[in-house]
Length: 393
Ligand SMILES: Cc1ncc(COP(=O)(O)O)c(C=O)c1O
Image (cartoon, rainbow, N blue to C red; front, top):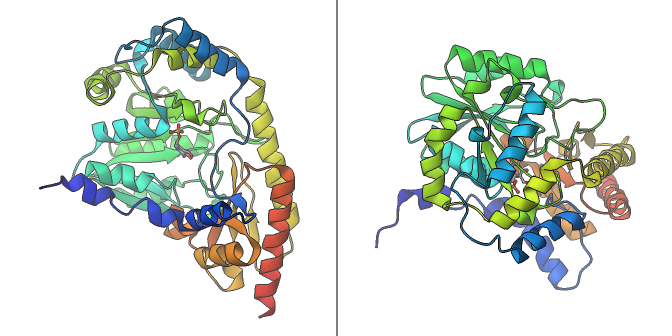
């Protein structure tokens, strides 16, 4: 029987990137003690108030169908959040509630591109982006992030990548895996490129709340002259340590969201009202956990930088935000993947090879900061030990 070509386009995109992680899991299942620095899942539980809010809502019978756009309570909360952020009046009709950033990105790309189109994407980028774009039939055009710019996407590089087929500039700030945060000037410059070529800007803002002291979050959605061409994907996964709730949204202009709604309804037929109630509560006030996680990740990132400073062959790239640190290992004479497998086999520490995020990061590995301080410190000690051994040979 025939299968649609979308399955070929996304085949093999997932598992290869996770080979180190999968081997680490197998070792752990055999009882081996592995320090797992691969995945970026918050290491704190979802706040009890939010679990209670979802529970209360379920008990109160909020388990029926929702509207395709989302529950009024959470749309109102989103309108308030984005109005405060942008300084403009943002309406409830500028959002669609969906299960997480990932499905928001899928929905938005399905709406914006198709076969023959090109999407400009930073290299490296979050591991699912290639699959997201390929699913639509469009192709990614990678723009290498420069270390000299702190891995902040450069507008001139973006401009050089534009062709007549370009439809979308895909931004992710704060950025996974590098932790780079685009400044307002960066965004304005990239916005000029988008305006000059009449392109959409797709902005993945899932790490918005995890910006460390010294940097400031900025979004093209908050720029009045870019808002019409900007669509945002985000969620509570990182901000409220709630990835399992799959609580996310798309934001855009009222006209765009009106066009998007039938596609969202076709795909989802609405989301869970009890999760919307929880999310409305989450968005209604500050939760201490957000600052706690941000400060913990910032402190752990500083620790990694200090622990590995001066180790010959290693170079730490301190992040401005998020839950990861990139580490260059090419000074040891091997690429990120070879280093990651050696590290796992010889030191029982699992990290992500940079190549999982793009060719430009092939000489790096990504360390997750979502483990207890002591485990991270031990992980760094073992990374330094392997690096020293590799230098001696
Ligand atoms: C850059 C980026 N976008 C999207 C996601 C997925 O987020 P969600 O859990 O909201 O689907 C992640 C998760 O790690 C991410 O790092």
